Image (tube, rainbow, N blue to C red; front, side):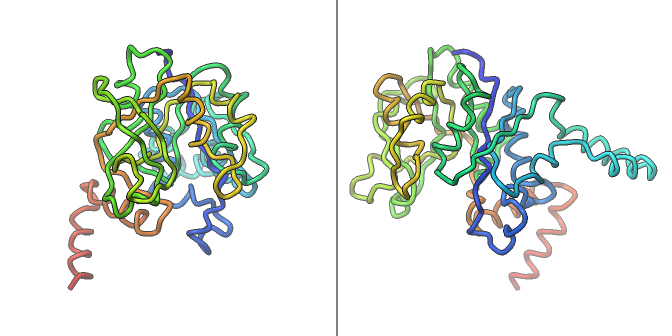
Length: 290
């Protein structure tokens, strides 16, 4: 498979599940410990070797672009105060010049439409798609695991999957499981939010994808689906008729930060991984729990 050099981050959503916090601040900038959600996901992509970071934004999302730019006034202040550790931290998370691109999704027409908006920036090569609502906590990031597993395959489409209890299966996109292929398996079908009795497995699509560029031609003419939006899953089902899709059960713990409980759980889990925070946080949790 060709190298995966580019990653798309759809960050145009309204974040209505976090109102009023997201009335003026993008949900992608909500902090998990001391880094915004989108920074965690970009760091995962960078660890996987991604060279070009493509953000599909919307109105009132300019702060995301500012976050991935230099702040000269802040840097000067930190220099004057000899805050070298903070300066190094800012530099560490800053994309290189020309490696971040931003394009607009003018209408909220769904994930499929957001991906299609990135077509000119991606071009005719395979790319990664990372949903910023989902954090995957593991030393080896989820996208890096996917790229490793796809080595040696020709024109592979790869979906990260994980198990959920069957009583929750109706809330997710679900895959059918075919023959094993190394650490992966062939995906026999994809079903969006099936009732429990019709679900092909208990494996759900988690928010990490490697897709071939032919998906853009399909999305260009894709009819609107659920919610009157252009659904990415519908386009992947069409692409699966001519290209193979693989599923990978990744190592690590995922957190749905689009939900309040998932967001709070992520903050606790990531903070407990920090030696400078964990002891005090554990004591505070024990105190709160009585």
